[in-house]
Each structure stands twice: as structure tokens, then as C-alpha cells.
Length: 80
Image 1 (tube, rainbow, N blue to C red):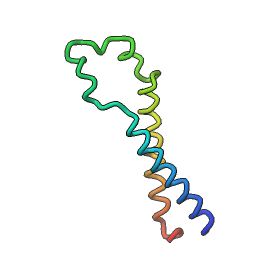
Image 2 (cartoon, one colour; image 1 turned 135 degrees about the vertical axis):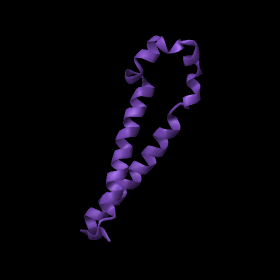
Image 3 (cartoon, one colour; image 1 turned 180 degrees about the vertical axis):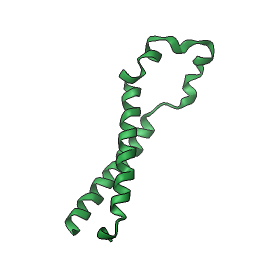
Image 4 (tube, rainbow, N blue to C red; image 1 turned 120 degrees about the vertical axis):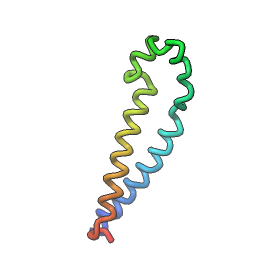
């Protein structure tokens, strides 16, 4: 069990670093102030999921779920 705990800890650290990097790469929500005047109906506003920003959001969700699951698994009494 020590080897599995070590591997999961290494994966957990990599997920933590990746999550921090992905969050820092994203734009702030205040950058979308053009939505007040109706500028959200542009091509980029409609296809947000296919853009780089959309991929970053999806990958952030994936890494956040992985972070939570690994944190729960590593806190099981088996790995203590």
C-alpha cells in the first residue's frame, strides 16, 4: 500500500500544480463587460466551448474533480 500511496501523492501534487497553472491562465470575468451593450452575440461569445478559453474552463473542471477525489482517497485510513 505504500507504493500506491506514493504514486497517488505524486499524481495529487501534479494535479495541484496543473490546477494552479490552468487557473492563472484564464481570463478574469471582468473582461466580459461588453455584454452590457450586447456584444456577447459575437462569434466568440456563441462558440465559447470551442475556443481556448472554453477548453481551459473544461480542463479546470476536470482537474478540480480529480483534486477532490484524490484528496478524499488519500485521507482514507488505509493510506495513513
